[in-house]
Amino acid sequence: MLASEIRRILKYRFNLDEDAAEEQEIIDGIKKAVEFKGVNLWTLIFAIFIASIGLNINSTAVIIGAMLISPLMGPIMGIGLGSAIYDIDLVKKSFKNLLFAIIIALITSSLYFLISPLNEAKSELLARTNPTIWDVLIALFGGLSGIIAGSRKNISNAIPGVAIATALMPPLCTAGYGVATGNVSYIFGAFYLFIINCFFICLTTYWVIKLLKFKTVEIINEERKTKIKRIVFAVTFLLILPTVYFGYIMVNQELFVKNANEFVNKEIISDSLYVLTKRIDPVNKKIDLLIYGESLEEIEINRIINKRNNYNLTGAAINIMSARENKSMEQQNYSKLMEDVFYSNKLSLFQKDSMINQLKTERKKAERLKMDEKGLLNEFTVLFDEPARFSVSKTLIFDAQFKTVDTLVLLFVKPKAEKKELPIEKIEAWLATRTKTKKTKVVIE
Image (cartoon, rainbow, N blue to C red):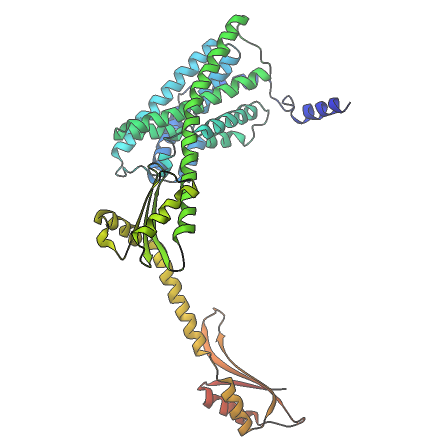
């Protein structure tokens, strides 16, 4: 009873038949986006230029814009649809159009990067050269979202999201950058990412179309179906295998950086020792530190370095250099580290200077507002009378724009004897003379 109720709830919640478009409507929609001509072709070229510019100037927003208008999803989903319903003509047509789109993308992006004066590969471009297992998962779940959303009567906002997540356009433009600069590793890395995205979008399209039980164009015998499944499995395995390795390397590098920072924070930094700059190289397992503070003997430095095993840094090359004892250092390394201090941390130094200046200004204001309360109390007692309560303070007066206008001295007095009247005007005159302030206010309780 309970099991059947759970099945009923799951079927109700995960039902794909609800709001599904007609089978022919879905097929026609995908087929329409397969061919690159007219508007689709021009949109593709413009998207390539936009993506190339975004990669060139390292602008995430521009790259996202290019991905949103890119029409590359059409032929990729066409291959998946054609494979699922055994429409060989659709598969061939989709392949031809995808190949045409790839050639156009490579030519356009290569031409752009050849004429662009900006030749440095920035982070957005480099991110498309080393695909990992996470890119496979993104393509997998992105493809599933895309085909499910595309099979609804009302197309949801999942389609633009899939275009952004799977990022088909940037890898092609990155490959174009590799062609323009002659960097073979960029070409292969970016193409590998593009192939991963294409394959898993095709694969998920195939799965969902099969799940929706679309009618097949041709009748395929079981032996051929089994053969196709084996080929798909083999290709999937071969595509995933390198990404697992690259993902493993990436995780190890992230752990190395984390462990290196922990080592520096716990073993190096102290009340008498500062790290002016650090360079952590997770690829070559190397840590360079420039320190300032108390002098460390070579024995002490070696003792600190030997603690690296406690932080899973076994085999890491740790180079600790003192800013005071640069004669014993390699001049080249010392100069490089000092350059990091004065240039890489320039913004931080400016921020510190700004903070120091602000604190100095605040201190001057505070000093200007200081009062000699005890001295004023003694003088008031001699001149007027000993009060029961006495409070004096200096404060700043501001205008509507919160700019300092003047300074006011406020005196609060409670006479000791009841009904005793104090000469307010004389007290204010004395207070102004004594505090060298023009504006005074005396309040008698």
